[in-house]
Structures are given as C-alpha cells and as structure tokens.
Length: 282
Image 1 (cartoon, rainbow, N blue to C red):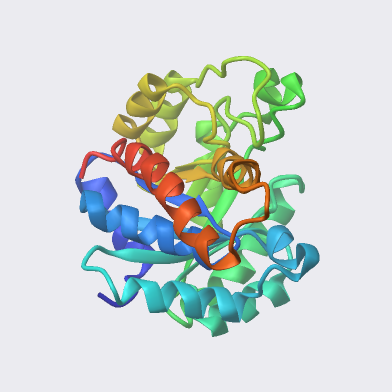
Image 2 (cartoon, helix red, strand yellow):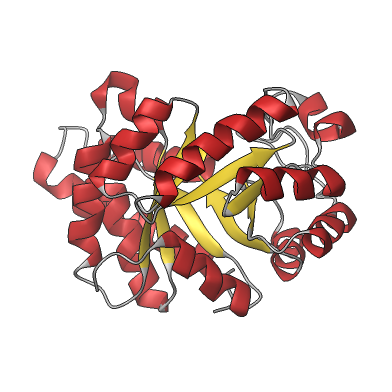
C-alpha cells in the first residue's frame, strides 16, 4: 500500500493498546529490511530519518529518504509511516514536510519550558497546514553513556507540565522522559512506569519512548500498556548493521562481491527486526 499518515498509525496503536515500532534508518538496505519485516509479521511500522545521521558523510537527505520509503511501502500491504526524528531546525522540518514526511519531531527539550512551547507551537501551525503531525519532547531523554541522564529526576517528564505543554503547543504526540536514554546502556534501565501512568492519565495524547535499545522486553510491554504508542529503536539496529559488514568481510577474505552484500545483510537484519516487531500487539 502507499504510505499511511503517522497520525493514523498512532491511533491504530492507541486503539490496540500497544505501540508501533519506529526504526531509524540511513540507507535503502535498512529501509527495505524494516518494511518487509513488518510485512512478514503483518504489523504497521515507521521508518525514521534523524537529520544528524542524514547529513553525516552525506548518507542521504529528506527527499531521497522519503522517495525510498514510499517506493518500498508500495510493495507491501501493511501500513508504513514516514517520520522525521529529533530536529531543532525549523527550515529542515519544512524541507521534510515538503518531501512527504507525515510526522516531524521538533525537539526543544533542552530549552526553557515557555520557549519549547512557543517553538513547538510555531512548528505545529506550519505542519498542520499540510496535514502533518508533530511530535514534541518534554523532560529530556539524555544519553546512556551518562548514568545521570537516566537517574536525574529533574530531567523526567512531569504530568502537570505535560498537560500545559500539549494544550498550549498543539503537539500531536509527546516523547517522555521516564528513565530511558539514547545509546548503549552501561547498566539495565528501569522505566518509571508509575510516572508514565500518571502522564497517560493526565493527557489524551500518544506518548513516545526514545532510547529503546537495550530496555528489557518486560518493561517495554508494561510501557506499551500504559500509553506508549510509538517506540523508537536506533542504536542496536545500527550496531547490528555495522556488525554484518564486519562479519561479511571476515567470511569473505577476498572481499566477496559487492552485489551479494545487500542480500547477506538483509537476511540478518530481517531476523532481528521480526523479533523486535513481535513486541507490538496489533
């Protein structure tokens, strides 16, 4: 089918009391693997572009990324959504909207609350004019390399502030800080499920969990039951992709054939993706 608006997919997840899994991708191999793994398990999925990754060594840009996801989505029967991950540059967000992204994230989480609200509101006014949804972030999801980012309660999302943020900004989805962090965890994270329940009871907005790589499945299942409707995965997916490159060269000391690598990588990625997608209870 053709691309499905992310807002519709989030509603599907909310209605099913579960979460859609959203994967950061950087090239066609990753996109193709994500979409066809979703087809294999008959579940919706999101492909995400993170601007910092896109611009790093010119991996891709919003236009080529959107075109690739749209092309692969037309090969399958499951809903596929296109999302722009963490972005502070409003001009880049507008570029992504023009390219066909149906959901964009404005990340003002490190700004003072009122500035974050004002900037998110400006983005929603622009995005909504094009029927594009907006994800915001409140509290701050830091980095797993810094243990304080997981344990500093001052960085966690507060329910009453979440209500003010969503009401005044008009954001369609909210990334919350409840104990997760981006990158590779040095110790097992412990999500604050009670805080998540309180946020979910306070606002009627799909909630998003960032920093998904390495969180135990039992905690994820709890989070999905209590309001997380979008779950982001990046680090472990990237590391697996990198490891397939190393493994391929080790198995082919002569260098192998460049035409064989994509098929080799996709088989490994598919096995991982199918298992990860099974977390969704659609």
